[in-house]
Image 1 (tube, one colour):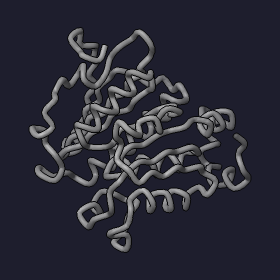
Image 2: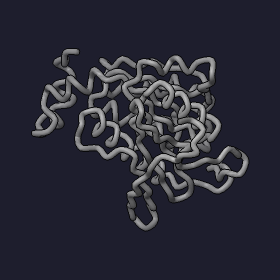
Image 3: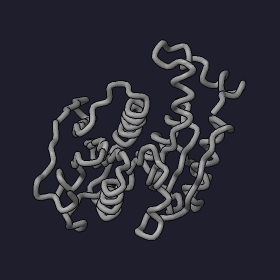
Image 4: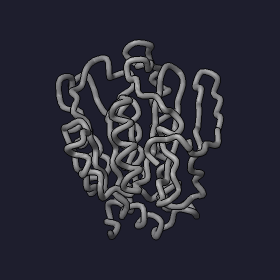
Length: 246
């Protein structure tokens, strides 16, 4: 995929970086990334991926924009209330790079449409829904698709990247063998700090780039961030021999 003259100007400051030359940029543009969920995490995540040169992006969200979204979902404005997140997000992202190839899906991921993820270089799950997270994790594990899973609640961020290589099992259910959606804390019940969602999106964008361009990204590491304390912890994980997916 060739870089257009317009892109050379848009990304000129990034291309100055010694570790991000034109070859790396072309490599990134050839990767296909799927983001599930265009909420507080998905919005800054998608924005920064496009801003860093990602050109092939699939975005999934079946929701409409509400006023309660605006404190953390930075692709939307008060003028977008009632409109489809997927439609507005695509429009805003193309405003950064009109040359990007963005497939926008106004739907929730279900068993019937998981095949839309098949060509992904990496799947990024920002769905904030345990049922969806389990479904996506199972599919990514079965089809050996790299998966970045992110969640935020209150002031706390959790991020983990699963490479999902053949014969090397470690997945979300190894770490969180919890099947009860109703007992999990949610943003609409316990709250969320807007900056926590934003920081989760930015960190996830960088982890995605690190992984795709082999910038020594560590896999199978659970990253925990407390934005109130500005603390970051990295926890090494291992497979659960009792995991039902292995």
